[in-house]
Length: 583
Image (cartoon, rainbow, N blue to C red; front, top):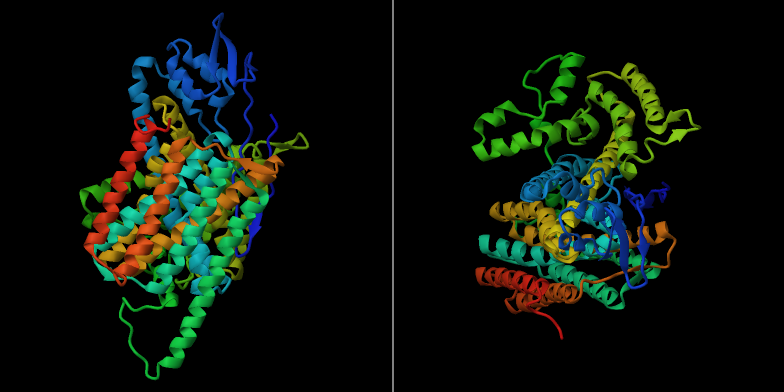
């Protein structure tokens, strides 16, 4: 089974590693007809079914397993589990509701894994890298921090675009998250705390986002994204970053000339630079606070290892509510596994989170995780010269490097090259996120087959909600703490990165990997146009109504946004089930 591969793509300022999916080969006697049908033999009976895997539910229960096994459209591209085969081959037909329930719980847990990995491991390492590279808060805010906050969306889009059958998931998720954030989240912020929006950043961000939506709308109309088009997405994002930097520099220059005496700023009169700095501090996770040792003084190597691998703070545990304790119990296995495999560098601490025994152990385990998660472990089991598999070579090299590091360092002082652990942690956490995103996409596609829902609907509902719920709670928390302007700006600034980099990089990787000249887009009929139109209307509504209110946002504005999203969901469901259709 030959897999297609692509060298890692280096981008200015950070390395983005994408999981390259292996092309699955179908087994059995299959013949594809010119009109899109697949003919196969099941238990001696010739049957003809549409190539679309969703036709499986129209078959007899005794024939569904053979259909799933023989139909290439039902095969999962990448991932560790075959969810469709699990539903129709391992669960009896009368236990189908149980299988769906288990899948939904596993989907929720995967979203939990994505959130924990991004918040506690991915973002802190990105902050450490930006500090090591001595980037300004503006550059870090619109590159590293945006990448950290949008990691689930970006990796879900990369995985979905790698397979033409799930490209609708990417479009639905990116557009659906855009509608959700610009209506529900933005509206909820104004309802919680009415405020006056910053005019200049708001107009800048919403203009760039409208251009990005227009590009995607045009690409959907043309039905394809070429190499130049994909590079245009990435180029537009680079232009957005440059614009943010220049605007901030010009504003600060004008402000320094106009101010004679220093004026103390209130939280609601912050410059872009100060907002980015506060956003950076707000989004950064206080890793050391949770894992700070209870006993002070000299600790042995074994005690340091046990303390570093303990994801539970007993002092906080006693004061938490029952719901928080249940959530913490659910996160414990994930946090322990990530602590064991992902190094985290904290430049704000004196020791920069240097844990000598754990960091040396991670030098062995982290590279092993890298080779076993890249392309679902295909490269990890490849034998070099027919002698040793790649994973064994990685373990040997990692053990040697860990031994040298252990005997050349001490527990009390981090080594000079400790900052390199931030890059290792960034790569490892990125591949953990990518592996979880692959499973999320495969589960959603399986649920779409069972319920006969289009990928676009699954993307704009389950996938968009799951990836955006963390950002929503963060923005609502900022609003309650007295920073609604910062939270409102994050609604429009973050999703610019998601759509431009998600579509641009996803299509670019697919073009290079498949050696094609373009990526074909197959919209799910009227539904995609409803989605794109709704996002465009929500942006136009904000662009017109906010200046008319003199940028003084009230609760009425927030209620209108919430009502807009409710109407949008109703129209989407009516369109999906054929109530609204074009003749």
